[in-house]
Amino acid sequence: MLIVNHKVIAIIFGMSLLLSPIVLTQDVSAQQVPTWVKNTAKWFGDGLITEKEFLKAIEYLIENKFIIINPSDDRSQNETPKPSSYDSFEKIVEKGIEELKYGDHEDAIIYFDEALKRNPDNVRAMVDKGIAKASTGDLDGAKQLFDQAIKIGEKNKSVDYRAVVNAGIALSIYGNQTEAMSYFDRVIDNSNIVRQETLYAALVNKGIVLYEQEKYPEAISYYDQALEINPGKLGAIVNKANALQEMRDYDQALEWFEKAYKITKDPLAWRPSFIVITE
Image (cartoon, rainbow, N blue to C red; front, side, top):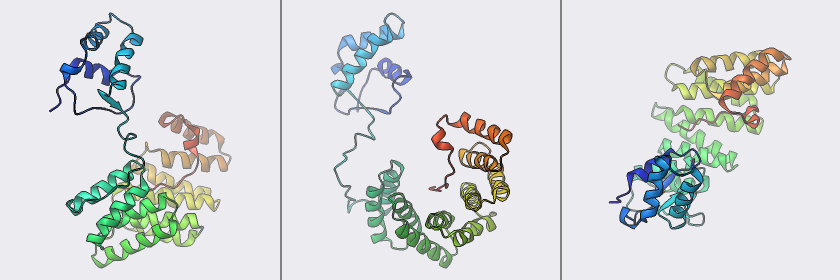
């Protein structure tokens, strides 16, 4: 078990300059950390030295691999994941979801492929693989997986509505808006059994299709329904602001853009965008 100097670690995690995730290496102990480093941390904590002087001690720890910054980025970029035959089905799906979370979509597909070899009708793995494929640009492959997941769900009388929403998004990107609407409407029509996050996504995405058809008031009505579910989520706020701007209702548009600004100061996030539901 790794033993560390708690004063050092408390200060490291408290520093505003070190925003990245930090992990301690597993083969060092507090005895190996030089005394001057420990003293520097104490002095900094007591306000006796400057932040710059303390950062030199942190740099020493990083350079000598006592701690590692950004462990998620430190994962081997060239190593292809190899699902172990000893891993349970649940563990393999969990690893795939983790790769999906980190944005490693190709690696996620490897895990979901292995999971589907073991259980070809597993809807969770199928939908998550579809999300990974869509993220790599394979919309056709993603749509096939979503539709397959929907059919299995219908057969088992337990539809995963994430598949329905995401299939609609794939169709929207294809330009098949009429069929896309039928997918979004299916989620909305089953609002009594659909998870709130999924319903939110369906409402916003239907609004976006209407926005693209220049039906701005109708689009706003769906954004407003989404905002009733989650009034502080960026997707509906931004898309409503854009629709109001297209209607030349600049005062209200500005009001909604200001709400978006409180969530993110990045104006690139204020463009109309489909809402993918992953969980």
